[in-house]
Structure formats: structure tokens, C-alpha cells
Image (cartoon, rainbow over all chains, first blue to last red; front, side):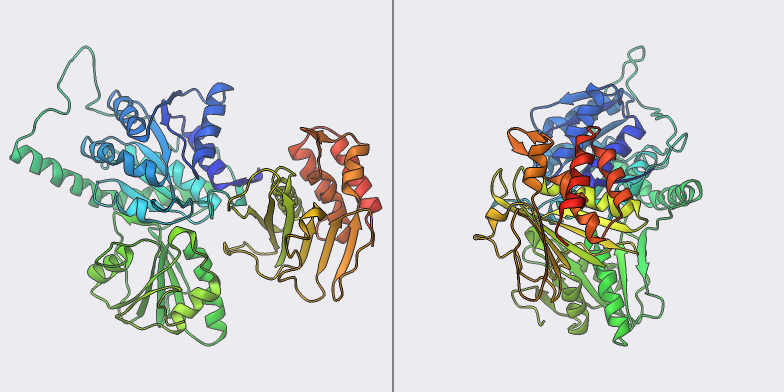
Length: 370
Length: 175
């Protein structure tokens, strides 16, 4: 049935369908509605999970780690400061190969206190070994959470997945969406190395250089294998439920001379900019990365590339722009825009493309050439 | 694309009105999005929420700059807020007021939603509920059908007084 709900509510609905054994969470704006809704579902019997109301995000992730190592399906949600506080444990979750699913509602980091959308919080988790996906609609948030459990728990992956949605812009917007009956789309969780009281083992013990190095390589091997698992899962999701997703979403890219690359809701707004530019005779396209880790192979040869970063690595540049440049050996026009919830409209994006200066970086509203 | 901005005060139900309107548009077979503007909102402070309705899926997340329709749930915000800001030439403004108001260049409708809510004893925490009757008044302007408006209200509220209030607003709004 079609309903109109917020991005946060859609995430909670998908988690309810996935039936995690444990939800451990601490509230933080703008994700609070996710964990509030799940707490309601647990208390009114709609979700048979253990809900652990922890005292911090660090503890939330620690509780998920404990539950996952005991063989449980686990979920948490956070944002911004909460994710930063969790950081020690996010490394542990990936290193211990635990298929935890987390919704991160992207929000800037303080100071100054700012509650609005920015991707830097997730970018600071880039190197932890978590898979990262960025969604752009309420429907996509719901569908991707369902797929995230299956991908994380796949025997060829066994890594945690972070599903990112833009704070307020997507977490609080109400859009129509359809729920699915997942049936056996998410198979029961099975971990071969879970705690077995009848067969005690040590977990998290010391590892010498040789073992440690091999563990790191195995994370990377699984990250590479995850590309296939994501594609298989997305294809099966499309066959079963009629909505098909890729590693990226391309819009009018085929014959484009210039392509704008972005993450999250900016990628949907960019499609409107593309239609305006096409009407002007400019052959432009939009490429929205859904999956950021593992980083997808892109085909940008021969095109002008404009990258919008809603994040920044100080003293270096936009993280997405850097990724595109280094993986594709192309020069880009790097636009830094939308930090701290800065309003970025389709007209603004059309301006970035029209007035692109390949090889340069602009801060929108500060020294942009538009 | 038809764009609506709703002015109210925190706690008056402006966000719920946006959601009901989007749901009614969906019932009509259109696409719709509803979103509040999040700033330093708090109970009693002037707030705005937005609705977009279109025949196609809506890909715009930035704020509405030139609405087709302005809804003022609480006319007491008008001295503090330029409610007409950005309204398209010839656009419509619907005001919760017992009195006729005129704004040159715009179509103006008024309806006394507060009295309707009080008549039906639709109250929460001592304040009249405006978000269900206003959907009736909006249906009269033709942006959503009356049947879709009613089923949107019934989908969210089981108390039939909400429907009666919406019907009263439909009948009483100035045209």
C-alpha cells in the first residue's frame, strides 16, 4: 500500500521487516525518529527485538558488536557527533567481520552547532572497512536498508553496512513509498564463527604482524567481492519487487559532454538541472554514486566532470572529487557546496555546470564563479 | 508542479496539514512531497511547511521559492512574517480568518477554521485543531478532490469530527 512517510520512518519500517535480534541505539537529531519508532515497535509487539537503550553511541556500537558476535542480526542508527563518538567501535565492527547495519543520517560536525545535512560525518568513516551507500529518496532508503542486511550477512562479505541519508532534507521529508513483503529475500543470519558456549574460544585476542596483515587483506578481498554481491542483491530485488538499483544512478549520461557527480539528494536535484541544460542545448548528464565503499568503476572518459562535495578534507579538497580524480585519472571541476545544510538548488547546480572550470575548486557562495 | 507554502505557529498542526494535503494529492493519483522547514522552531513560533504536487515524481529538495498557493493557518504571524513573499503573480492565498481580506494581484479566500474547530470541539492541549478543517477548504479550491481529502483525513484520524470540520470548511470558505 502507498503511504506518505518521512525518510526516518521508512528506515524504521524496513528494519521492522528485517527483524533484527538486537537494536541498540542512542538518540541524536536528525535520526531520533528512527530509534523512537523502533522503540515503539518493540514496546507494542510489532518487532520482537531486544531494544537496548544505551548511554552513548560508543556503547550502541559495542552492544551491536556483542550481539553480532553471538550470532544476532543487529541494527543501530546515528548522526554526526554520535558517529564520531562511535568511531573506535566502527573499526572494531568491520575488523571483527560483523554484519551490523547502521543508518547514518548525515549531519555536519560541531562547532558551531549545526543540525543540517553534510557528508563529512560518514567520510570520516571511509577507511574503517564499512560498506557505504548513499540514498536519495524515501523509497530508496527503505529498499536499501532491506538490501543492506542481506549484503552485510552474505558469506562473501561479512562486513558492516552504513546506509546514509541526508539529514532533514531526506530524513524529514515526506514522500510516497511502497512497502514490500520481503519473504525470504533476507535469509536467516548465519555466522560460522559466532560464540558457542559449548565450544569456548578467544575473540579479539592479540594478532601478530602476519595474522593481522592477512586479516586486513581479507577485509579488502571481501570489499572487492562485495561489488558482485551488491549487484546480485540489487538485481534480485528488482526482479522480486520491481525497483532496480545500480552501484550508481546515471541520468542522461550516454551522449553527455559534461557529467555532474554527487551523492544523496543532491543527485536527484541535479537531474532537474540536467533537464534545464538539455533544453538549452547543453549535453549534460548526472551520475549519482549510490555505493561509495566499495567504490564503483566509472566510465567518464572523454567527458568534462563536475563533482559536488557536501564534505571536505581540510588542507586537501573534496573527498568525492579526490576519489573521482584518482580512480579515473580525470581532471574535475570540484564544487564544495551544501555544508551544514547550505541550500543548493537545481538552478545552482545548472550554474556549476555552465560555468565549470576544469581543474579548479570552488566553494559555492564564497568563491564560486557563478 | 503546484507548490504550496503553509504558515502557522509551532504546535498548530502546519506540518500535519502538509502531510494530509500530500496524502490527498497521492489519493488523486498525483505525486507529492511534504516537508517542514527546520530552523529554530519551537511551540508558538512562526513556522513554515511546504507541499509540492505534480503529475511526475518530484526530484526537487530545495525550498519552494515561488509558491502557487499560500496557506495562513494563524493570521497573527502576518505582522511578523511576509507571508506573500515569492507568491506567483495571480497566485492564491487562503487565510484562516472570519473576515474578508484583499491582496492586490492575488486571489484571496478566507475561512474561519478556528470557529469550525471550536464548534466541533476539536481541541488538543487547549488549542483548536486546524489541520483537518483546512484540508476541506483546500479541496474547495480544487487542488485536491474532496473524496481524496476525506480519505487522507480518515487514514490519519479515526474521529469523524475531523471529517465534519473539513466538510464545514469546504462549505464555508469564501470563493
